[in-house]
Image (cartoon, rainbow, N blue to C red; front, side, top):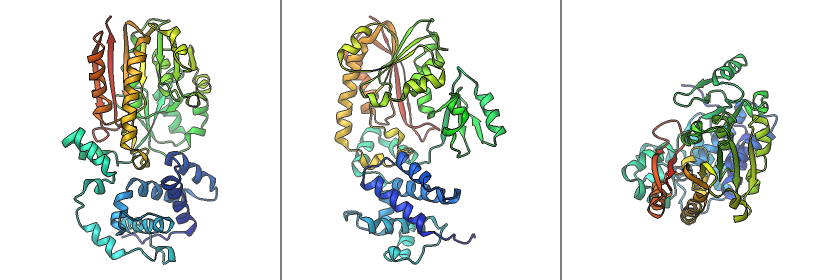
Length: 411
């Protein structure tokens, strides 16, 4: 048995700082934690790993950690209680020695160890999700729900999409190997590599040259589903909810740069650096435009050969990458989002020409945002037919949870 490692106070304080900012002050874990860690330049690799892993783990397992600590869940978690939660997780992990600091004076080691021995019957505590999400998920997904929510708590791997306009996965893999970066091809995803080395590749010359983008496998599956490889040169593709443009760039690569692609979004800030990404990836014929009302869409009515609607959603399929989201998301937000999804489907379908195809996609696990939306749309729009649909859950494979449906406009 390995001896327990000591904990340095500045690292413990770093974890507390991350927890305060994410859980109390609205910071996004995936943005705040890496930035905070990089700002502490004197920390070594092990130090950075400690702060990152303990911060993410406590956020991910928030309700379970509270339960194991013995704190009444109804009590407000303040700064001092955060230290108690950190101490609890130190005991649970059993890799570091719990320091005899005043901040850890309320950590009940014996109580934690005793509670660890017992099976937690309440799934919302055992898998650490809000009570409302437990009820919502159980109602919509039934017997599948326990496996799905368990999959959402697994650590996510890092995937990249190789830009096929400039290189191939095999060539980039060889370049990585020369620089001692561990990666591998991904079966079933022809443009993907999985990274097995935690390196800041976003600063690498390969990234700056546009040879790859960071993109989850689920996201990488959506653009091919639109069947743009069947299009003739000069065809019109519209990515109407483009966001930061990852799928826009993928569509350009899949069409071999021959299709005209229009990237649209109602939020201009999301599109802010897409033109730079287009330049870097050498994606020709891609235009970027913010939607400023019906006047923006009017010139494109009935013009699209392919239409991608990667609509706003609850993002519940991405919880293993964004564990703090489950504590910030509220059911009324999902209800409002479902109305927005229906509105986008009903209004944006007019951009598609007769004979054209559209893909509706979300990174949600809930049927009410997925199959439910498509069934409603088909009932209201008899001139459309469903060609195919797929739902992926994180417990079934390497992807985040997501859904996609391909529809054809027949008249």
